[in-house]
Length: 101
Image (cartoon, rainbow, N blue to C red; front, top):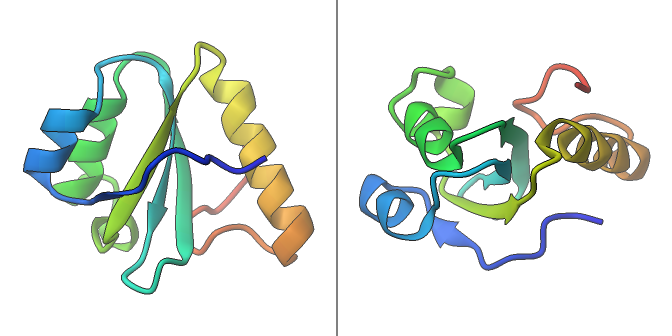
């Protein structure tokens, strides 16, 4: 099942305000609302999202327009589940993901 939490604008003030510094997974969406990336953090989702926003994770994810998150202590396995589910449904990975796991 996809991440079903509220979607937020992908900008620094929002990330700092709403994203906790804890383990979990996140999804990034383009300006049309299409999922472009699933990612995870084993300890600090906020830092990972800020890193994407700054372009430290590549241009593809820096171009995201919105995001949502899911808090979980099993971030690695949850990210893999999300990617495998997307691939089963769409026949491919999200455009900014290059592999499962």
